Image (cartoon, rainbow, N blue to C red; front, side, top):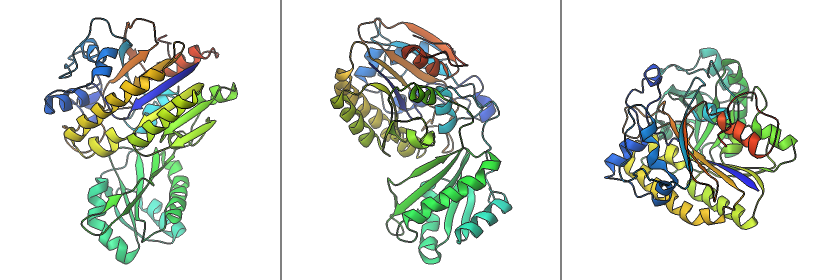
Length: 391
């Protein structure tokens, strides 16, 4: 028996009740991109009940091309995040049973986003100076400052609307190993500020045609408590991470990691695990929706990515056995038709497939941590401190 948690990174389904506090009133990732695309062709997710979810939400907007169905194959619902924030770490940690009531520290847009002492310490410990030091689009800032980095060898350091300290480096100007060491230094320096993630952003190419590589690495804030991953691991149950999941949880609680930085590679890993008939808990993240399409405000690419993933599901779902549990959700929104380039505070979809069982209405769940409680239920572990099982 296995349980699979598949996170479609940033696939939100409508503004959360507290969206105004984040400047996200009106955001709706799925509905807006579907409308812009003239409708989405998602036959597998449609059969599971994705189109039934907007009807549960106050002011829910139908997903063009994804109608509600009378007899969904999966149970369907929506989840509202309790933790403060709308970032990758906060969302995934809450799914695993951790709540961050005060959230992570978000830096001002700048210039001069990071405290002077933090930058001075980083420069002293890494032996290189910094440029940038403001909130920026990752692709835009490397186009602007990449030529200078090739000449001067300075770090490109920037933040965003999330709690991040990002370091971009051309792989010919600064070796990957040095970039990763710098991220480890930054991680230690950022801990007192409660920064969610330090991110290595390597790139290659020539001025005017720089390209970020798949050598990205995320360095998360130390986990403050045990998660469902730790509890499963301690109970001797296999825990497999696919995608960037291992980085998000500081490589803690896993028996195996299959790290990847693209949907294609994560899907290949899922097919491999299906061929191996793996047991235990599989925790996977499909990153392209957020990284390639949401932040870059590309609704066409986002729609295409969703349709490609639905096609993947059409094949991969054949490996789901009678006693397996599949949970599909998201960690936050990233509306490609919303202002700015940051995440959006939204409800996230919840689909729970148990082969041979009819789909039911799971309603609106207060807290992503219902997933952790449900996993404790599946694997017959003692209850988690928070949440209510939806199984």
